[in-house]
Image (cartoon, rainbow, N blue to C red; front, top):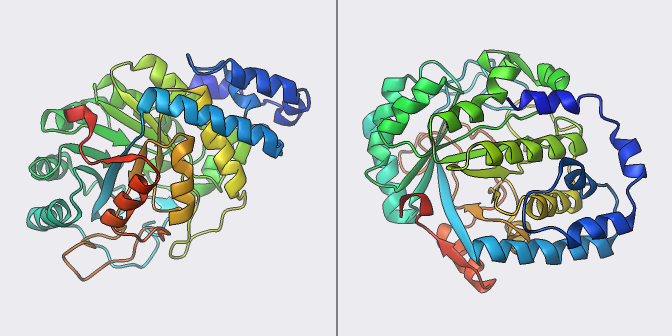
Length: 370
């Protein structure tokens, strides 16, 4: 289990480690990368804070080279579909948390189909992420039927819901589920308790092992990540990268990818105490690409349009587009509160055009189902 890796680095002295990492050492690691996953501490060396602009440029060139070698110049597009904001958890950073007195909505099967049809016909997306609040009201029966509906309109359906047992993932796989997205949010076990106060999400280990259960259930896509702004930036970037590496090494038949979400404004939520600035986000992204050549990297509409576009040559493989983060927000009306604020408000066609202008090809159909 990945927890053994967490324990290995629980009391690691990052400051002391970085003090012994020279510029020449970083250059050597970059020059010898690209053929396989790097060793843990070589990956960590690439996360050294406050490195020079010259080193960042060398990283950028290498990240671009590796990205084109393994992924070509293609960017997969996907969109989110929220079908419920009912939640049993009390997470300090989320608008959906149980204590928030917001309008709750749980789409009917007919409403799910209405939303799916609208996205398919108007946004032309073929890859969808099905999202809910984390609640037992989202039963296996409800989710199974929702997935069956979505598979009529989309080639790939990923879920981002409450963590489940392996047998439940197996049940959903049988009705067409392709993969799962689950963010640990915070890898530091002690800090995790401060942000997850009630509900099943307060169980650190159960959540941490969720990608493992998804892999054991033979799901073909697993996406992970931390929520930057909660824990120490270096530690979170390092451990989330190692989690991706662990999954890649253990589930060879699954496409493993990682996201880099930064905490965003949401109704009645906390502000991030460990701010990840643009420069260091770029460094983390490039470190992921250089250290783990075949790892997928997702960038969502949390980030601004200009910033997202500039990240494309550095290793990004997937882009969300036309995102709506409230339940029934595409076509039904009577909108609920969004889970968080987005920054890139471009239409799918505008994002498609921007990607092409950069010399890349937007891909609407996921390779998982070709």
